[in-house]
Image (cartoon, rainbow, N blue to C red; front, side):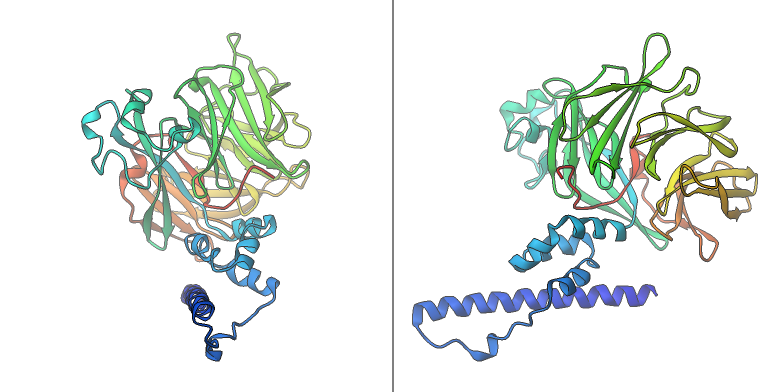
Length: 421
């Protein structure tokens, strides 16, 4: 299966390259014809013309890196790639990895200006962009001192190996939320705020802060609401009386709105990022000994308590698994159970898998790679991938770079998604 899939992608890439080459030859021949008035070579006239739907279903299978360049083959391809239905179809076919921040060079010292390590030629600096600066010139470096710049990177797992991919994007704030290829960053330069961006397309927009709160007493969640066809940013925060408040922003439709928060005592900790699945955002309410999760359906924005199939421990997590909500729980020292909840008003949790290992202690589930994809676990400084079909767990070769900033790595899928509908 993997060989045939790889062969299919190779054939598609070859076909795209041949079409680009033929298009260039035609353009060159047309220029020659206009200047020399000589007849055009008939061998270069016939370009295979495929129906748009056929092209759609071919190029939607291309990996994102190839798609970004292939969209410039012709106007028809560019039009297709920018269609919302194409962007969503490509998103559904994409695999999930880890997005993370790694420290870049210190910007406090100007002695590094001009060096390749200080500022790459094509580096996209998020803060410079939102400030309207073309680049971080010497006279603007004081705006970024003395904080550390972070590079935004992506870790992808294939087989037993991992690959670190560079966006060539830097920022000064931490990641606060993510969804469908979009991330929300802290804005810390020239006033506090938030920044929403797609690191692939480099589309960026600033978002005002809502209620001010210290970072360890707040939680942000980003999710797409199908009823309104817009992205919602949800902010939970703990006030001085230890009550949890809530405010919501609809991208593109006004400021923050205050809504009723979860009942007092439902949530004791805001350290775990929420998971978007089955039309809601879901929070694990405590560090340990969780009997339920706290969920907020995006349609009615009212908090509900969903009982867990068993008590969740410190190493247990809720994940999005194939469009459903998953609960991955260590049942014993050698067994991990995977539970699935398909809808908020359905039949409840159903056990999908039991993973038996020599030792399951300290195995922390991170994410699912996609529909039918593998479950990725963190164990100490190592990553492991569990194939749900073959029921085999394998160690993944990975650099420890993604763990340089604890709590700064998140499940992420690269996409062409925009919050501007």
